[in-house]
Structure formats: structure tokens, C-alpha cells
Image (cartoon, rainbow, N blue to C red):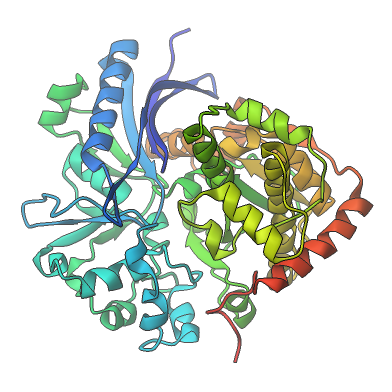
Length: 508
């Protein structure tokens, strides 16, 4: 049977970009990866930049391959999602003034603390409901305002990364709300940019783009895009949940009643619950939770946890040393190592940036009086189990903030393919874990395109589509008593290094 419709999801992550086709047929969605390409940060001295032109070339190549595979006539819509917080500055002609900076660029160090001398943390949280992280757009903009380059004074607008791609595709200069909400410059109650934050940051409000909602049709692809890719000139671009986590959470295959939590598992682990409105309580601020906008006017109350970044950095270091182990090989090495010899707090600042991760982990263990891992397998076992402990801690605090118990945790995203981590999480939190879909971001992206096309009318209908289209796997707790004893040790280690408390979120 011929497919009813083909949607193209342009899914851009911090490590790679992909063009994925969503094929809708008889009420089911099937995903096919069309093209994958590298996305990388380029170092220029200490500064870190995104190779946006390389990213754009990868997008165009993916669209060309999609046309070659499926034919232009059957491709109806396309949508873009990316990671959050990073942006580019445009001049009046819509040209980038410079390469977009990466959020791990060291220029943001100390900027947030400096900013909060002008707008105290309790007032900043009341304005934005966003967690205090030096990677946010706000400290980046503070660095921009103080920068010697003077680019901000030359800028007509800033656009976040998915909006930059949409601008190249169809010419619209707008910002979709799910990503705008990650900036720490957006007021969720007013559904508008925060004038107080812009003023305190020294950033003119005039550079902020118009805000739109997920599900809106932005326009048709530009003639030059059609010419370069083979797409029909009438092919439409849709604003999906442009923050990748918003798209991923949209695709959580929820069915049962009762409170659920989700973990978008990848480079970052994002753990949260879905709410109808932002939670701006002093306790939410103290625990450094964040309120990000979801699709269909939901709110994602969540916390960023430094996730598979630690494994990725270990793999990079070992590869440079001549050991090019695959991720399945690394997982097997971790399975063979003894548990609970040592543990780390994944969110301790020393683990946040590019570094010799195995050495930094060893130093941490030495400083905290623990057994130093003696092999790559022991390093990986330590990282996986420590991440599971941190997820338990954040989940307990999340329950405290909302005043409800979470019955089940849904794990979505590529990190869900790590069965060792999934099992550790189930055992650590002592409740069931449902895993899948792995391609939640692309599925949520396509789901919102299907909504724009009139195929579904609500989030409930969209999630029914996801349940009917993708399989899930259940992990149940094992040895919960042993995990609880080890969790007590984890809390002690975390307190030794001053984490997990936010240094910005203390109550008065």
C-alpha cells in the first residue's frame, strides 16, 4: 500500500545531525534514517564555535537524498529540532555576523554570578523559572554584551539554532517557544521575552525575534532550497517542538493513569515531569529545577543531569590513546566490572567540559578517599551506576517539589539503548522503567508535523499514535536493598564536593 504521507524530520544534535523520514500509513508511523552527518564544535584558541555552514550542507544533502529515495511529490512537510540555548546573530540582510558559539565555550564562566548582582537569583527565577546553568543563553548573551567584538551592536536579530535552520529553509525570522523557554530570557507566565532580564543583561529587546507556537506552518521552502535539493517549491516548513527534548517528551508513549516521569537519555540526561503550568516555588529554585515549555501548552519541569557526556569523553580519550572501542564493547566492559567500588557526582563542575575524563574521575576518587578505578571497565561501571544514583536523587527531589509520587519512569532517546544503564536506573529508583522509543525526538518532530497537516488533534492522539507505532521494553528493579545502601554512600560523596546543591538556588 502506498504511504499516505512522508514527513522529513531534521534532527540536529550536538554530536551529529540527521534527516529522518517519517512514513505515515494506516495510522502507524515508521521512521527511516535518510542521512547522518557529523556536527562538531571547532576550537579557535580557547573559543568554541559550531560549524554552521557544515551543518547546513549536511541538511541540504539529507534533503537531496530524501527526494532521491522517496520522490518529491510524496514529501509533504519538514520540521527542524536541535539542542537548546545556542544562537547566531544576524544582520539586517539575514546573514550570520559570526559563527555561532558553543555553549561549553569558556567565555560564560562567572557571567551568571555577575548578572545576579543586578538581578538576584530569586527574582531571576521568578521571571524565567529556569535552572541556573552557565551554558544558558543568558550568560552567553552577557558575554556577548561585554565582548570586545561588538557583534551585538551590529545585530538585527538573534535566532536560536533551529530557527537559524528554518530561516535558511523558508526565510522566516521567528523563534519557536519550546526553545525560547530554555534561554533564561523568557517569561513562561507572560508567554513573552522578559524585559527585565534583557535590560539587566544589557541586551536590547529589539534583537529578540517574534515568538510562535509549535505546530505553526512557517512557509514554503525558498526557491534556492528547492533548486538545490529537488524538493517541490510548495513543500512546507513546520515549527515543531524545536527544542529536541520538547519533541522527545511529546513522543513519550504514556498510557496508564497516574504521575509519570521521563528521562531523555543522551549526552545530557533530562529528568522531569509534565505539568500544566510552571512551578516557581522556592523549593524548585533551591533544587535548581527548570520550567521549559512543551508542545500543546504543557510545561516540562525538569533538571539537566550530565549524562552520557562522561562516557563519550572517556571514549574520545581512549581513542586518542589508540583504543577505538565501540559503544557495545564499552558496555560489555562495564558489565564485567565490580559495582560500588567508587562513585562520583556526575554534575560536579570538573566533569562538565572537554578533559581527560578517566584521569579526572581517578583524581575525584582519590580526593574523596575512594578506590581509584584500575581499568576502563571499572571507570565505566562507576559512571553508569553514579548516573543511576543521581537520577534517583533528582527524582526524589522532583517528587518533593510537586508533592506526588512518580509511579513509572519512561526512558526515551538514544541512551535507552544502553541496557546496563536502564537496569541500573530501575534498581536505583526501585520502580519500573519503560524504555522506548529510541528515536523519540524524530518521532515527536514528525508527530507535530502530522498535527499541522490535520492528522491528529491533540497530544493524547499523538501519543496513541506513538504507542501504536513503536515497541517498548520494561526493566524491573533488582537487589534494591544493596542499591539503597550504596545510595547512602553516594549522598555522602556528593556532599564532600559541595554538590548537588545549586550555588545559586539557596533559599533566604
